[in-house]
Image (cartoon, rainbow, N blue to C red; front, side, top):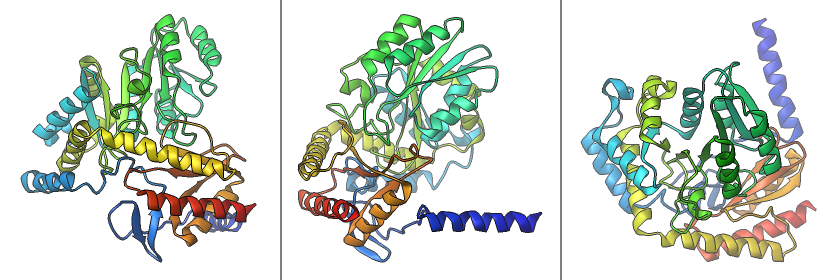
Length: 395
């Protein structure tokens, strides 16, 4: 049986290779910025990073991180409720809550942990969770973890009639939780937050927004989906990450009421059974928030560069998916075609990534372009030329 298992495993991998859908890892050799050295591909422009506002190599944040290592060492060596809670955790959670205009926040080792923590912790037998069909996989897994006694429903992507239908069908539930991404990572579009809030208020449902690709990216000062829509209330829970715009190092969070955060401390499994966020990562996130709060112009600069790139691509006859985020997806069809396009771009000096099934629907594979404020306009122009020439080559 063991022999058959490994034989089937090898055949599966070979099938992926033959189909042109095998994912090969690339090894970066210096810090994340506009142009990096990649093994076999020196001086490559990066357009697939979550380093949206260029803080992954920010000198101020790096200097503070070094001080943090000297003070706290390398890690917590414990879960929070034993001996893994440091004063810097409290500083970060208070700073983040203030930044997002929420009562409180709680850190996790990743947003994946946060999403899979909060949904099962809040819902009980007979309750209902309603999720947008294009939500991130961590939300999908969080919904699965609620168990069989909690009702799980899905509404069509950003379709308010579909959401209302599911809310009506859930009227007998004691608690109903609607969950949506703020920025949808594969589409680049932004949740219709005012319309969703109108419906959740109408039917008395809770609303949770995953702002992983929103915090530090959209809104006038980078405060995410609520600020983008000029919404000041109606969102009960925000989840997010420090591993993207806010320093890029790692860690996730839940921001909500004090009672929600206290409940998560008491019963959310990733908080009870996983090591605390290392103090150095807390320092990186804390100082990224501080730097962003003092320099909101970097969000404006990011949006200007995103608009510039999108317009140049469209002027060349390409048709990226529309959206106001820093994500610009180019749909190319089959998965193998997306991977081929990304490989061709890599050979020309542009690092992008092709995404296919099961990350996106079959036949809707894409090259996802992500803009960073660390990219200069010269780098953007070079990247745009490579994108245009590669897509023409594919056609």
